[in-house]
Image (cartoon, rainbow, N blue to C red; front, side, top):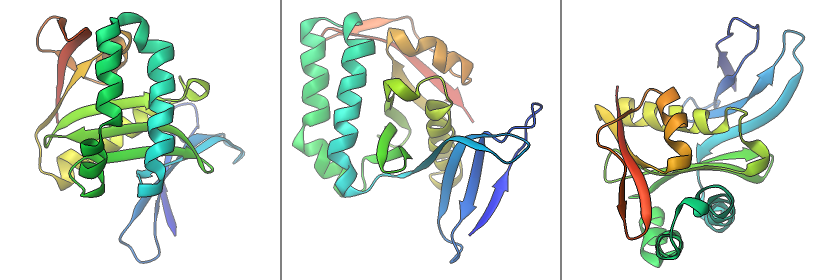
Length: 194
């Protein structure tokens, strides 16, 4: 495997990319590497495997309940749960129609992001213990890179929960409409042009 990395002004490496020996697969290994080479908070970012679906959905649900559920009505909470546990969503994932990227710390799922309908961010969640460490930003960056370079898309759109609007603004997204509510779910439609 070989490695590419960008060093920021603080002499840290926020993400390292490893290319497999066969030259076909990129893997992310992220965290903070100080100038002495000490790695802290390492994690891998890649497309999810079938056996990772259930632990990923559990992490998403736990994070949703803790951070976003308070902004939703009972109906909205129920609709979200029905969406992430719908058998057709799992089937779409298995068929490659619902692209799901995960971040792992060892074998533990610590974050996940997904794309559907060509260029729509469907979910982006980070385990409570790993928030504010660049996990969500790294997943989002990888999904955007995939959409731009491999899928040929010119932009990404999403429906941001109230809790996440500022995060997406910092990532270069802009609101395209004011906040709306449907089925007890409050969201702000946003997009980012590549």
